[in-house]
Length: 202
Image (cartoon, rainbow, N blue to C red; front, side, top):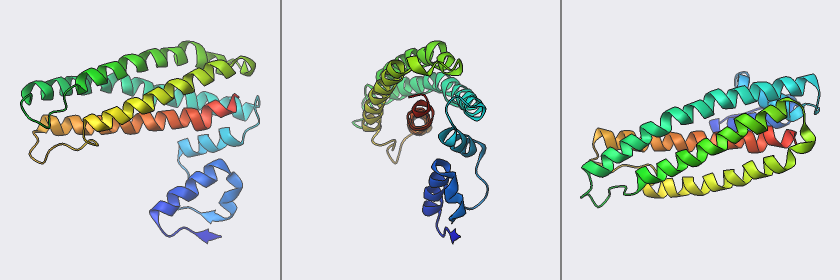
């Protein structure tokens, strides 16, 4: 068994073990897999339609709804309010992130529509086991994810890669942190759907 000497390689090995459980016979990662990592591994390795697949898909959907859908709904309005405050108070500052609040509002509105389609149509169809009718709605969701990636690129540009000025006030720093978290959460949210959940139903 090959030990993994560095944190970067450890993360790489964990990802490999999640995708190919037999790799655990070759690589020794530090500590047990997390619950989510086990869930990803189970769904990736499961036979479509089997009980393991049904359980893993249902648990992953529950995780996505709680960890991401509800979190986005709570945190976007907070970030928008921070952005409006910073844009108002620092309007004369050349580094002021002008247009950030409006961009976040557009992102939040688009995301809400996207999540409602998943909650009301896509996820219930998945849980009902109706794989044959999912190709088009999944492709549509993935296309919308591509739009989100473009929005995230714009978010990074408006916030100078989530880096406030050195003399920024607490509100501006909180805004940068909030936007960085939105970016990180959205990317992980889409990774779980694009790379783990959706392929199982195609």
